[in-house]
Length: 375
Image 1 (cartoon, rainbow, N blue to C red):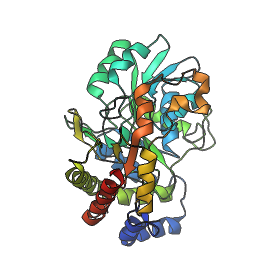
Image 2: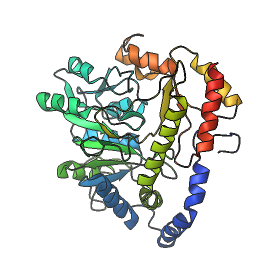
Image 3: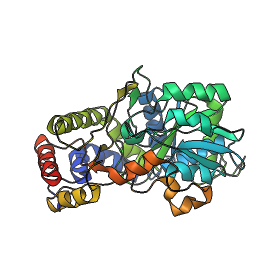
């Protein structure tokens, strides 16, 4: 909620209030027909989401984690297999691989952009590797031009973790979600395209994978009570699909506004000492700024965050503990220092408020308080 803060990290109540006139009729329509599971709004949203990205198929699921897990399962990735991903992502990137029965193999990020270090991937490839899963972190595409040739050379699938990249694209115009075999998206409420609860989707242009995903999400069934495989119960419900379809029409403008907020931050903070601003990389055609992450190599990040909070500015750390340092993944055997860039980032980054409804006055206030905190 925005009330306790002069500048909240996000302002979902404001966005929801602005959309009520559009949302209420579609919600009421679902409440009238009561097709809460696989109602017609689900197929309508899937078609619209796929078309918006230029993908052939979109399959709605219960979460972004399930989206990545089901891609692995649909591709036959399981016990004894390995999937390479990055150490400084949210733990769901690794957990999705684990849920499929495979082993996540981690590599370091780059401090320039916090994206997976494509130069480190080759050394992590083994005969067990089945896929590379780059994360389009914070809304910027990973370096697909460097990763795709590695996949082609070694016969690997390229699985995009696009949970933070709704509408992001490469310099050549291709959207995240269309750059590999398949991509997993999250519709967690705080995402650039967020539901009123949990949800996710897979985008792919592979017809066979699309059919497998539709089986997996619905107990292995396309025809009711006829089960071809052992499946799961992970479906994007009709209310969420209806809400997401309304919000999808606003996504381009919201992403544009996020870019404006990022530009205001850069203008205000360009001469701020000991503060490193996010960089847009040469291959990036559109950074959608799911997050605006700054780094303090010469300051105590937590002290800065406390000062900002005292001034009414809400911030978040994405992410304070890299995956290889999580107790849940001690089994992988990585030691402290295994991925120094990810560990350095975890200790020094801070996500500033970022949402499409943010005003110039709010941004100016955040920057003013940040400058004061750094003195």
